Image (cartoon, rainbow over all chains, first blue to last red; front, side, top):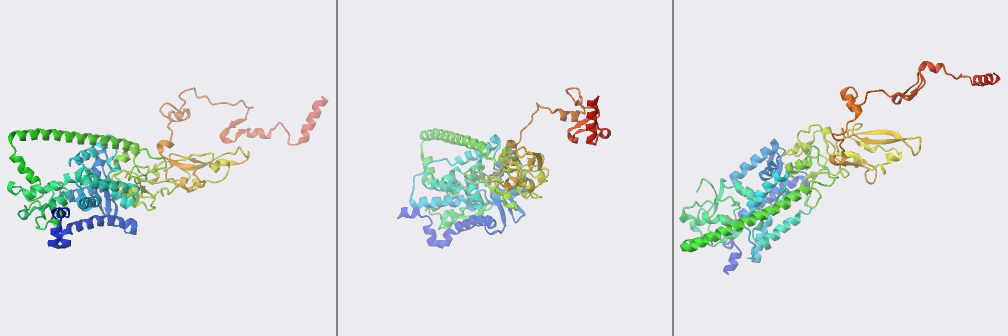
Length: 286
Length: 301
């Protein structure tokens, strides 16, 4: 019975808060992720041009430029300085993520997250325990690599491979064989390494985690004294390490604020907790 | 879970703590080296591949204003804004599996050539200058160079009138001209040969698209494939003479033909020309009977 419960985190939350209450932030995130894709697709599919381009760089309503700072940084490292619209776009996006947390990109925007979350869900359903070990720091090595290669080769090398931009661009501009890469990540996360891609390898997430180290918006384990150690939050969390200091640090005088750049602000811990331990908060409220 | 582990740590004795620390250090160093080596190997592969895809097939043409390929691959962020702002929808982003660097914009002249918009919206949309914003006149674009690559199949070389490439050329009369040559097959007709001039051709590809043959005889090639280079070594005497105002090598002696007095030869002025006054004083009379009389007089002498 206990095992059954552990494999299905949130059972108690559903019982207590209802289905919507236990999936609220997940639903909002999926609406955000799919909504952004839909905005980009309105143009090519229906001829309604609200947003043009893709996540690397876009133009909204012919006035608002937005550019991905990570891709732009790779370009900069290869010696190319963007034009004014590109610089404005990068600045807006940088300010946004510095405020809301860099890895909000991962959980609220990136379409690969839907794939890997689904893989995580399948993994739990299948009860798979075996997982190849990668250090979570591997992504920072890869991040360094993607920034060292441009000055050496003069090319934005990583964007020839990057599954994140590949999936987004594929959906909007044409997939080619890119779907195979997505399937590969899906299978990798299920059968080879738990949370392998987003949690251990993806240099895009690594970059955004660095942006988010001092962000304003944070999840807080505000009512951590009510925690009944059911472990559900650890099971659903894509970066379980970030929870411990905030949730269990009361006796060490650690703030209940989850203060780690790798927290994606996905809000699944808020959803899944039937004791309402967690809530969205901000850096100055601790 | 990690909480219980934490309590375990504090409960350990001094010696085992020390042992654990060295083990951790060893593990840390091992893990770090493993990651670093892995990343390094991956980087080697990715870097090599990135150099390979810079040389895409010759039929791939970048949009107007595109930087030369090595710089382009360091500037283009594959956002597709150029594709969206092309009013003729002829640009596409390379997909995985295409023989072009993934995500970069290109077009294929034979499918849909560049229409050479006056305001160059594709370049204007580029947020990174991969399509240079310094290009302000589309006639200055150099997407490639049209080359009449198959003179065996081009029907103009067979003596047939075609000139479709000449007629569709947006820089008509400058980028493509029609040069007449003698038709040696018929002996009496002219060949109307299209000739491309690299100082005006933008590489838009309209000629390649319009070529009436099943496989185009005129094709847009990348500049570096299409153009030769005379190099530093060679000097053309007539050009040097123009610059210097006099011949630099041999004494500048005008070539002279051995011709009867008053008769001149100038290739550009219709060849041989007799002095105008001597045309009246011809050795031959306009009356043919005079010649006969002259002959009779010579015989009777």
